[in-house]
Length: 126
Image 1 (cartoon, rainbow, N blue to C red):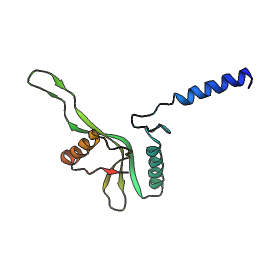
Image 2 (image 1 turned 90 degrees about the vertical axis):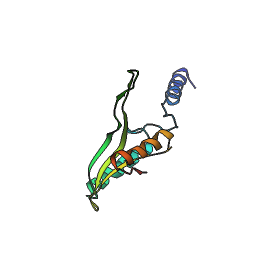
Image 3 (image 1 turned 180 degrees about the vertical axis):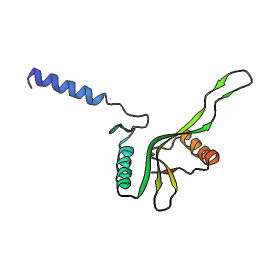
Image 4 (image 1 turned 30 degrees about the horizontal axis):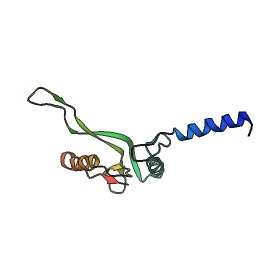
């Protein structure tokens, strides 16, 4: 291998090794947090074009617990849940809140339960 090809190879190897992965091994893809989420977004976009769903939204934020100040005067930040996708199922007319999950973290499980308690919404997990 000549010197130029060796340098190109080394640069490509370093670039491939430095690709960022999420905490649980998910690789970003097409502007989404994981390949699975990217695939699901493409499926939902096709479903919307076919008229099966409508009003597709991505990264919709829901307030679960508002910001508060405790007795000592310390400010506690609000807690939000960000849904991957929200859309209307045209067959039933219901709004669907969907999350693409690889790993169900304890934090997600708590937020899923709070979504049901606070907003009466059951999250569809794909």
